[in-house]
Image (spheres, rainbow, N blue to C red):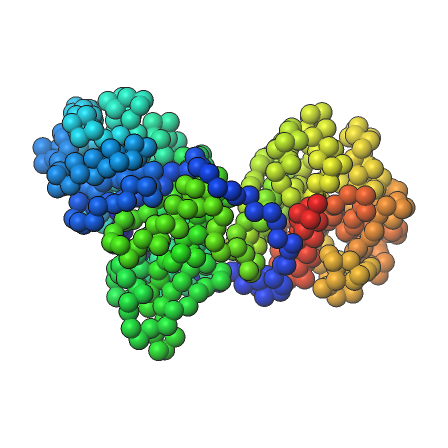
Length: 586
Ligand code: ZN
């Protein structure tokens, strides 16, 4: 379960540093959605064969007993210290809700590749897994093959392992039946397993969101920062979602140990000559030496509380930890249990931006739109995704506008990237959402409407008329910030040059609407504006808000240069924050 394989450390200073420096958002604290009472989350505790402590069976829902191994003949299961396993299973008499699972594998445990390579051996192994669950009174099997196709742990491997792994999951499910659990442990990057071809067989996946940093990096930071390793826990979850695992089958792993210069450490609190620090971006504690160099990354009740809140906010199946260990880890285990199993609020509410999710944001784009729009859309997704690391919001992406008001209502802000609802149902849902106080941010083509649009409400919502003309090709433009009294433009200069884009004029101009407040417009000094398509005169607002709604429209959004300018990035960030904050206050 512990990954001893350390590729070189990668640091990624990002735009987030800039954004965080620009302004830390202060938002009215949202109501805490928590109360006492049992939750449906799982808490999976790895308990090892080589420790002596008998676990307190009330602080977890599942024990994964570590380990069993593939037998030398590649067709069965061998269990380390079987008498301890029987003692662990006997805890169910004390705590009938407890489930005990045998974890087969672990770092350096081999023979998977040979076993999985033939149908005959796979099925014999699966039958033997079934036998041990019956014989020991187990509730299921966890496969901890580290990793298919890889020999880094000194085990045999084959390029066919990934395919064989999926076949093994099918064979195990068949042998175990539907009433026993089948889970697996996976590397943080979600590599080596084709989840789409086996996730139906699995009850859930335990993500090893630790051991992700070398000597001077935190091995289990929640969010990226200058102390995080090559991946973070949040990125590990995202990698698994992207690999096709639904959130309700994801269990995020948490380490109860520290790791750093001195390797693995179960008691970082006992080290001398070091200073304990807290990292506000990565949300984890760490130790530094007298040179202020990081020597150890670890977890405490605060960081685990924040991770558990992350699990709840992202609607994951639950949390897992390696490993149960000794009594000094009791406060850590208790923190996980209180939040995930008993539904208690995380004991460390936000005292700075991003320590927990405060709102949800939905981003919608159409991958089949014109290429220059998709180019912008993908950069925008990346930009706002990075913003989510420090801002404490959940970032969801869809490729079509939801046709359900209930879906939209989950979001404090819906960002439409060059896409509008088309179906009558999706249009109605969006109208209802906005009329009831929803938040909207729209770019570029979202205001493109003409006589074929046939959506009268859209014109009232946008506060502008139909598309009139545009400059072509995309060009940079000098723009006037018309007011700095509005929160969206308060931090902007009165004039600056925005990156190249295609800009639309509308007829009538949004300024003609008494509900509209124009924030930014193209300077008249730009006329004649364009080369092939030339705009020669006219009122040219490009960013505005309709006071009747919580909305900002921004005309930028064409091509690949939208995010090269820090001032424009600030405008986008301000607009996003203002819309989201308004929706939260409701
Ligand atoms: Zn365009």
